[in-house]
Length: 323
Image: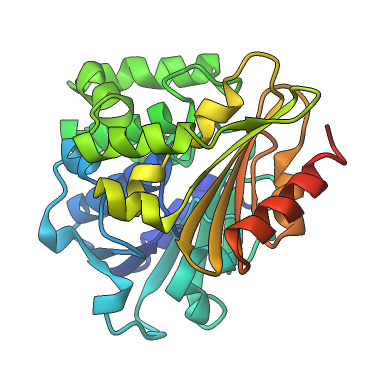
């Protein structure tokens, strides 16, 4: 693997950037995308973030503006020779959504922390020791000794780290994470506001959806596997949106005695998003990879093209092989 210094040297050669993250983006993905975008802007580079879906309301804490990003659906994506494409937090090219169609046709820099990343970029920096891609972006920006990190970039980095460490509750929280957070606080970030936005600022419809989802909660006979689901009818009845399902899997994982928590989200009749979380030993990234997904040993996901009942049966059968 090449070094971050080499990544930075290559990036400085380019003047135009397209920055992409994974489908169903989480806080680490969103925070990392915009922290890097705004840093590149400070270097007078032309940069644009492409998203697979509209931003969730909680990301208003980052101060993202309309001209900072476009949706793939509204952007004429093409393989340009004058553009450096950057993939962040995407464990494989398929996770880039519409961006996957050009991943092997452009100069792509792949920056990630998923252990199963297949190194699909022209340049790859994948460090599974990092709690979040936001931590990598912080390290990358810190190589620029002439740059004074402003509050906006610092807030985006902090949101990324806070999100992927579960507000410092997950096992990936390291001493290095706290050192970075201390530096970000010197730049003026509001840790309370970021934490509230990421984890505590619910819309009424989202809380109604939570109640519906929790009513489906089931636990295996041995108490080690818990799962819940969200069906399209629940979204319609509560007025909630798909991005309101983010984090629901944690309620299953956090049950006493449970090793693996799973959520099944019905995107449409035959498209099911599956999220996995484990506590101690189950490598849920291996389970997700079996169904074409990926992630971390303790947090992973996949999409299954079946009905929600079929997806649930298939996944539970596979998870039982590990627990």
